[in-house]
Amino acid sequence: MTNFALRRWLTTPFLILYALWTLLFYQLVFTAWTLQYSYLGVLLVIGASLLFMYAFPKRDRKVVVRFTLFCVMVGVGISSFAGESLTWRIIDFVVFVVLVLALGRYLVGIKTLRLFLVVIALTIVQIFIPLHDLRTLSFFNVRYIGHLASPDPQVASLPVATVSDPLRPGAQEIITLRGHRPIKDEAQDFIHMLNTNPQSATTIRSAIVELQHSYDVMAIRPGRLRFITHYATPQELVQLPFWSLGLVDFPFMTSHFLNLEDRTRMYLSLSSDPGSLLSTLLSPGTAAQSLADLSLQTASSEANNWEQVTGHQIDVTDGLSLQGGYLTGTYQGVPVHVKTQGVAILGVHHILPLSVDPNPQIIVEGNNVIQVLSLPPEQPRLIASLPGSYLHPLTTDVDFADLNGSGQDSLLVNTVPAQIFRLSSAGTWDRLWVSGRDSFRFETVMPHKNGDWIIANAPSLLSPSSTRYLGGYVYSHGQLSRVFRVYYGNLVDMQLAHVTSQSRPELLSSVYAHQEIMLLGFQRVPWLLLVDIGYALTIIVGLFRRIRTRKGAIS
View 1 (spheres, helix red, strand yellow):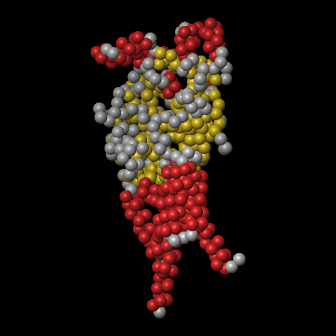
View 2: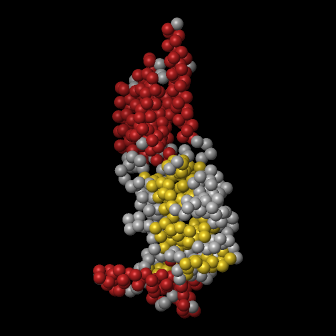
View 3: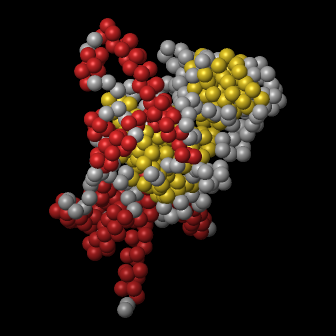
């Protein structure tokens, strides 16, 4: 083999590597910088590209510029085919390759065989590593460990809530309602159960109706290699408030819970006959009162049904519950009985500064007001109230985070706009941050020593659509700074996201609309940063070479 032939075959792999590098930069780094820095990111990419071109020797610059444009054009073109599957667009793809080779031969001046090998390499990469997909960008800072889809795409599986894992202290698992189609002979088994235990449902007719809307109550925890799924146990169900499972299609449907050997199954039936429901909706004058009466009736029925499974109707938190307008119960052996407006307990947290009160406080919500109450050994009393408004009503959709590692928790309130409040030592609320008019939404909190990470859904910077992406943020000097972002557009609506373990920070995210549960971790190596550093080093080496060449020419 001659030296010319050897150099020719050595040049082809370098052309392919350069084409892949160009594809990586302009479809991955460009996207990352644009999403991170908005229009400033576009200017950064343009500036970096100009420096990169300038760093090449003048005699090669024209070929490099043209070949770079060729690679970008081919990569963008292939991404449109790869995104829609090459199988049914094979004719279009062949025509595209022919036109690209003809244009490349004329524009770049490289032989057709080498250009063809470059196009094939770019095609293979785009199919198996779709750099055009935003989700691929997430792989560079977030590990997509696995997912669990609904076993039956035609039947919904509804993520519900998270509970503490009885087998793994400090970890959590997710409770979900897994829908399924009617099972063979299930009607006969259910009728037999009704005959032996008439209290489990009203009539045989309603039982048959319930079979069309039945769910198994499942518990899902992440394992080392796969998700571990099992039927929820009574120890897990007792941690749930009854409304987390019972209020499906509330108040028009009533939930019934039955213990069937090793599982708990939930059936749904109409809360009232269809004629009454229709007349309620068609009577504007009495609709509000009728719906209120129906809601009270349905809630009472579901609370009784929930008691048959868990043994309680009233939600208990750390031995405390809300009954008749009072927070009552026993906290650390001390009886508590204090009047409150709350109808739901949000949790026990350190809301006051530790220098003021080292003991935690209990937070309740009700009637558009969040109240903070002291707990023993202090005298139980009302410490502070955070009222909502007509335009920004307060609900139970609240998270708590220690923003600076001081031990004091702040309130992350999902109003529109989202807001962060902190209670001062004087008992007044300081509003630390407001999201603005966008659809920013707090999801959960990831504990960190120097300040918790706030896991939230935030909208895209450039897209005019309402697409939001899951991301991690830290609070500093009145602003939220993004630590990471997961570019999965489906991780948006009605989802639960929580930390599976403090020792192994992972996010277990369940997507309501797509019936999919995902486990996300964090890359130990900052791959995207390494790509940026590699590109910067290439530019620096090229500039240094040009400077030395120019100095040599002058001397």
